[in-house]
Amino acid sequence: QVKLVESGGGSVQPGGSLTLSCDASTYTRNFYCMGWIRQGPGKGPQPVARIDSDGERKYIDSVKGRFTISQDNAKKILYLQMNSLEPADTAMYYCAVVGTRVGCALEGPRAHAFWRAGYWGQGTQVTVSS
Image 1: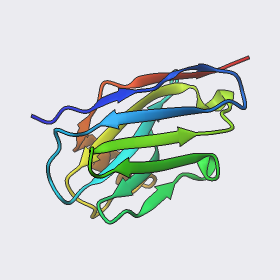
Image 2: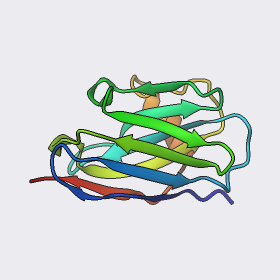
Image 3: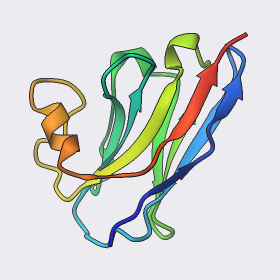
């Protein structure tokens, strides 16, 4: 059974940094797309960053240059390094994995359906406020 476990959330002031981790060791397929999806108060899920089994990374514009997604292939851990955090980044952050790279998008009409088809963790809360 696939189980993803996130950690690393917390409360920080604007401009601060956090690194989220996702233990994906129970996911054993070789081809995948993994991502971080956030859901702010009163908002729908928003994929923000993804990395696939070829190592290709993508970000939404609002986090480019501030967030870095990476993975430890040996330990099967997904990371999200978040710098220069803003109040708008406040959300529950979920990691998710889907068993294909085809159609792995962050935005567009099929993006939400793509991620909904995968496995999700329970989430970790990030709060940015002064």
